[in-house]
Amino acid sequence: MEIEAVDVPDLWFELPPGFVEFNLHDDPESRILRMVDTADALFTSATQEQKLRFVAAGEYILQTMISAGAQHVSGCLLRMPGDKLSQGTLCVMIESPESGALRQDRHGTAKATAAQWRSVFPDAEVGLVMLPYGISALCIRELDLLIPGVLFGLDSPVPTTVRQAQFCVPLKTGPGAALFVFTTEDIKHWAEYLEVLGGVMKSIAAEEPSWPDGSAPEGPLACVEGASS
Image 1 (cartoon, rainbow, N blue to C red):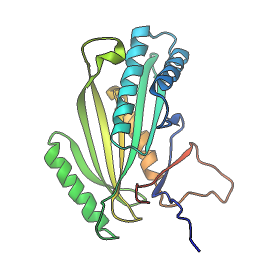
Image 2 (tube, rainbow, N blue to C red):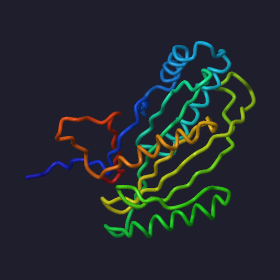
Image 3 (cartoon, rainbow, N blue to C red):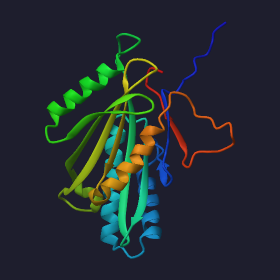
């Protein structure tokens, strides 16, 4: 008798309140229109140019994440003091080797990743952090991006600067790691975003969380699995 294989997630985590998971197979045009409607509803005092730049930058970051092989992408659309537009995007992908040992030295993997990041990104903040799930490498850096002008109806690309935090979390379920990447243009409110991201990272679990006392998480649950799961 054949036993049907069942895909088992490598990781579960909790999304903060206000974060919405994107359908990675959504039509980009429909997604942009929904983002425009949301921006119109939240930011009535913003100019159309401000809203357009906001939506176009968010869609470009989202498409970049999907092209990189993301298994999960979610984002938040927030109104900061002074009716300022603010957006953050969270991407999660599983990086699994095609061959190798079934188990890994998770501390060794995290340290090797941190060493590689220090070499590749000399201006970045790089270190190791201990999460409830286990050790993780952390890299925080700023990137200068050129957003295709076509998203704004322009011929020339539009420059922007984003700040990005990457967590490389070696898996308990086998070789490989989960890469959590958070990106925002709102560098002014980075401290607040980093606190929110910390909550996401502390919620990572190898199994689906349960609440026997009847309580529930503040935000929705999400999970990711590797291509070989």
